[in-house]
Amino acid sequence: MFTQLLAQHFVHTALLAGAIVAVISGAIGIFVVMRGASFAVHAISELGFTGAAAALVAGIDPVIGMIGGSLSIGFVLGILSLRGRERDSAIGAVLAFGLGLGVLLLSLYQGYATEATNLLFGSIVGVSDSQLRNLAIVALIVLAGLAVAFRPLLFSSIDPEVAESRGVPLRTLSIVIFLLIALTTAEAIQVVGVLLVLTLVITPAAAAQRLTGRPGMALLLSVAIALVSTEGGILLSLEKPWPTSFFIATISFSAYLIARVIDATRPATAREPRRKRTEPEQALQASSPDLTEGAQ
Amino acid sequence: MSSRRDKVVSVQDLTLRFGERTLWEDLSFELDSGEFLAVLGPNGTGKTSLLRILLGVLKPNSGRVEVQGRPPKCCAAIGYIPQQRIFDRDLSLRARDLVRLGLDGHKWGVSTLSRARQERIDLALAEVGASDYAEAGIGRLSGGEQQRLRVAQALVSDPAVLLADEPLLSLDLSYQRVITELLDARRRQHGTPILFVTHDINPILPLVDRVLYLAPGRWAIGTADEVLTTETLSSLYETEVDVLRVRGRVVVVGTPEDHNVHHVHEHH
Picture 1 (tube, rainbow over the protein chains, first blue to last red):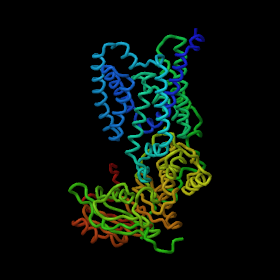
Picture 2: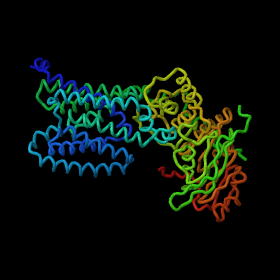
Picture 3: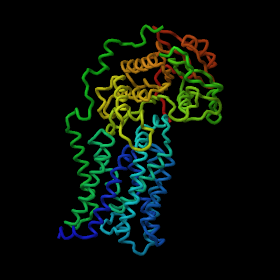
Picture 4: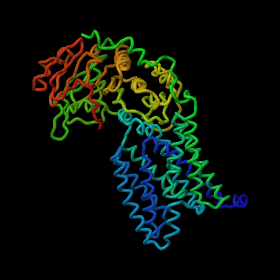
């Protein structure tokens, strides 16, 4: 039965859609993790749900509503470019309200049960050819954005003060990255659903960060882990009729656990600094207790 | 290398106000090639703001700033060492990547690193003695090692002037000396003037050519011996302030906010 299913067109479509979403989720995840924006991704995803619910009520394609919802919240978060606790509480407040609104909208919609389940938990097997094409177009936009802005995005994500001093436009990049995150989230919702977006956008990137110190390599590893999780999840769900999202979440979480174990057990030399000399703290302090001695 | 006494930085009649509060009025000074200027003063007197104006990211209410005769608009050759921030332990960024960002992190598009740029990064790492841990994850290095890399990051673009914001904060004495020696070597070998914001003059007292003292609403500039005196500081603060010299160290007593202890002040 497994091989029979593999020959089906809808399975090919699902695998392709999964691959597209995995590539951009894994790539954007690196920036999400570096900026500490996991909670923002969750909020963008839930506002995507609200947008989709609104679209259903209005009788238009929920994907359009989803993209609209995530882009609006992404734009707002990007413009505010808040940091730390202030951002967390603001996001929490908006997220909760958006979800409440989404619940109301869904209850107004006739086909409540299936659509809600699909939005919340994903429905990759239902992807049509035209949806696949749209997924690919949006993914190309995200990848192009990342390629053009890769270095300034990296710079502004981890080292904003110096980046600004070198002429990197922090606010513009904050808007750009949140819009790219919003597009990616809207894509990921179609595969794993609103509630499981983090399994593709955060988990692979978090695992990759444990495995390498190189930013470019981290991005590639994150994409690889997201790809294995998504494609593996889809294939497993052909074999056993459990939800695809469950398998995807399980594989990516396993990768995360394995990465942590590898990181914890590897020899210290791999990522820790090599030190030939003694610690300069001790060496210098012994020879000169007061460096201003003799001044004036 | 720099026999001509060029004015690398020129600050003219700078005025900065935050709302009703005037931080300084008509602040003017110039930086010669190779000069070491310490910027001192209590919290809230606009030390970091002055750096941000020089970097071109903050607009003063009036006045002009020029670096090498041009307004500091975007990536003018300025090296910047910010207040220390600790990187996440897991951050996927090697020491050499941090330095590389100082070279081409502001550029759009993707490109591979040319041999020449690779060599510049290697040289900058070697100059600060960080070659041994160039491949290490930045978040796993000590504060002192990270600060050395900050110096390399600021110098890799071969800046015309170096701005440092409390670069010794939270470093122990030996690393304070390592960092000040690196900065001193840079200005002696390349004539790069240094503007050094600090709460504590003592670690850099032997190196300082001039001191810019920012007090609430007033300022003074001159050599350490001219500025760090009971008379000058008393008139700046409009209250009796005593400046003592104890075994070569400067101790200021009686300022409204005793600036001679290490304040770790909130950034932003």
